Image 1 (cartoon, rainbow, N blue to C red):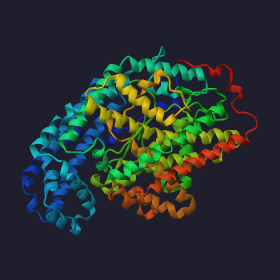
Image 2 (cartoon, helix red, strand yellow; image 1 turned 90 degrees about the horizontal axis):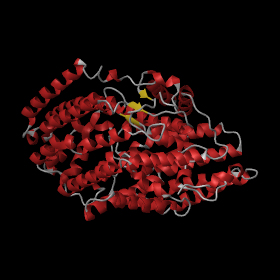
Image 3 (cartoon, rainbow, N blue to C red; image 1 turned 30 degrees about the vertical axis):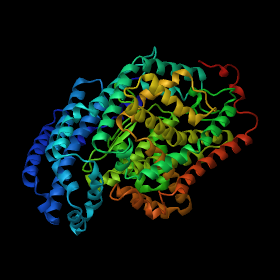
Length: 611
């Protein structure tokens, strides 16, 4: 048990029995055997015959294919969840790798089905798409065909599928193992514990955390840079082979997002970096500091509660906020607590960060946290429960329609955070406390909108540079990181030399290239939805729950049409940013209303810096 661990958390561990009873469970072996038999039968029955099937025959084939894919996803989901809490365990690692290899081999032998569908003549495809029997799968089938210009021959696709376990997934697993196994500082702490100290009220603690984080990363930077370079090259090769015109095209297609829409989103956010710089100028005044350094960005403001939330208090806080919005939503969330679908303790070897894994529609999602009791951890709980509720409600759509594109995947998570924020704000009595709380929320929004877009600019830089300059040194990568970060902060925050390698621990660049702009998309979308909720009240709730339950059965624009949202308009994104600016103005007004300087007591030795 780590220093920050709460005793009650020892029982807040997930039970994976709903997937399989254990790595040696007979049902796991039985499912593997079933997948092999079913794949062989499916291939024998349908390979080379897709163009001869009528709508009813095609429906039966599609349903059988979906059932097979769900069983494969179930196997890999169990192996990944089992591994994520014990990344140092050789048997857990071996199970994950063997599951990925098994998935790859079975998928290779049934890949013909999707390829034949994508290559079917348009006239024949349209005839099937218009058939009533296939209405439930229409969007999924249409979505597959958007890759028509980017697929390879069946032989090439099979070869790539078979090699995948030795490719990207192997490098991402190595990355997870490294970061999970690192021990930082003399206390040999986990990354999660060190990062938590960057939010500490004592500047010396923050400075020490920055030094420990940097030292731990620096000792492994050559390997982290190699992993990054290898994956940049792998993506460049894949994009070239598949005829993608730029590094982000594959992600945009997966997100069902138009290139121009994404460009407008990114450019609009970049054009408002002044909001970030204006905020940190305010924070410097509130803290009473002459200079604001990178390790001061998340320093709590005077008046912000330093309360440590017990697990039960965090649970009650989140459930109360959800109940005020929707009783069914709160009841769904409560199942995660009652039925053992959450893994909360911090532990060495456990993957850092947090996630909600959907697993498969026939089971339920699982949530991983590294809970230490901070107010931020309560928000993280709300965030991941939002994902979990979204995934749970969408399971009725089936495997092929349940998964949402990343652009709308953050809708419920960020909305859940906003509900908890408003719930806690109402309970905040004084102007000083409200100022601190509003500023903390602004920083969360900045992390979701502006920082993610700045990271998108970083990814843009390293992908382009890797393709034009060859392998990048860690210094070259760090230079691009600092340039894109400084563009956001301007002169409002001084980024010290240690900060230049902090790109190396961020998992999104490794696990999901191009993912990060989806956070900004989701946050600005939620601000718009929340504004509508405040205006519409209960009539909004039913539409919102219907949106979550729809999963990915339509494209984002169609799913959002009941709310009157047009994602193609620049004005929409500016509207979300105006909400952020309004919250900043509220913070500035609260600061002006607080007697004296709230940061006066923090002067003196707080102004030292570590260069």
